[in-house]
Each structure stands twice: as structure tokens, then as C-alpha cells.
Amino acid sequence: VYPIISALKGATPNFKRYALVDIVVGIPLTYVGGLVSMMLVMDVSLSAALVMAVLPYIPGDIIKCLMAAFLGVKVNEALERGR
View 1 (cartoon, one colour):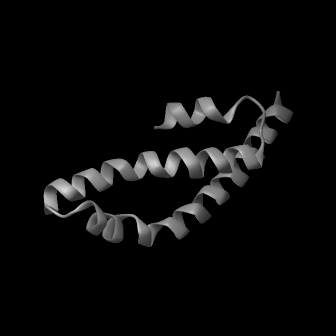
View 2 (view 1 turned 90 degrees about the horizontal axis):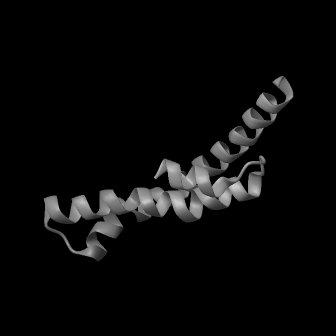
């Protein structure tokens, strides 16, 4: 997951691009593993697994992605200034 996200973020720090890649690519890729394993281990349907393992966590994960994008831009800008 991380190499894909890193490749899509590009070379220049940009909050909107970082946030978009994290939310549109990172969250779904991360959820797939948990969703599939919950369906297999607990023997539940896709809709039940979505309700239990995905939907409750989306708002918090979006907030975390926004915070990570903000921090990622600041850290990358600081590293560029230090060169």
C-alpha cells in the first residue's frame, strides 16, 4: 500500500494531492484486507462486514488522512529548506 501511495503523491509537497491520494487510494486499499479477513474469519456477508469493519471508521480515518497530509507537507517543506 505505501509504495503505491508514495508513487502517486508526486515529488512536490501539495496538501490537496496528499489528502486525495490518502483518502481515495490509501483508505480503500487498507480496508480491503480487514474486510476480507473479517468475512472469512467471522463468516459474515459483505454488507455485515462493511457495517462492522468499515463504515464506523471512515470519518476518523478521513480526519487522520487530512492531518497526515498536512504534516507530510510541512515535513517535506522543512526537509527541502534544510538542503
